[in-house]
Length: 268
Image (cartoon, rainbow, N blue to C red; front, side, top):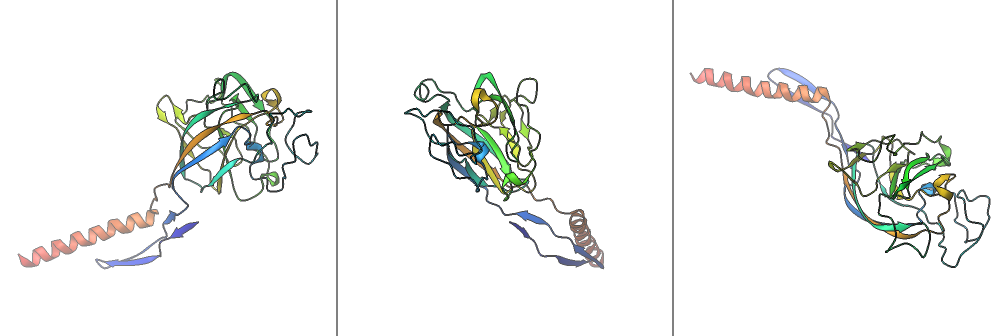
């Protein structure tokens, strides 16, 4: 939601100036703590039309790929965590914990940290309005959406977080709506990384990108275990007055200065 300062008029030094509106972002800002499970499928973000079927189900309406068998330690896919967002807000993250992609052999001893498995490359295709993902295997990722189901939109181009693309050592990033982006532990070599929400954003989802062999169609979440503990810091952008407002404040200052000069000359 956006609040507006009322339009008002200043009269000074014989000049009348109408100041334009300045918008102030009132979407929630602050610090939030989330637990992202290894089964939190980023490709189920915003999919209110989807019901997650029981393990072993071959329901063709379910959009994610699944194993053809059910092991005793399999877990059902889960919807990703989300918090509200607004265009222009700045997000930073601090993440810890571990996730493994084969139940029973991973966390806490042999799992992967939030940066994922950088020894391998994941190259997932887009799905139902959500972009593909290319980068390390199974890291913490984010996704900005508006209030609409992403299936009604065209998927944007996938970002490339491999060494030959953007990499993961960027200082700031401004992804598009529907574009999966790497978060990892939230740190680059120069410190905390900053992510800017695109215009139209209302939600930020956090989850895991997965697929059979980490390539092609998203899925294969049932054999994941572990979790990431994520702290999200949200800052509202600094409101910038419209040029007319800045000009008006300058004229106000000039008017006050001239008034004082006039009073001083009369006293003299």
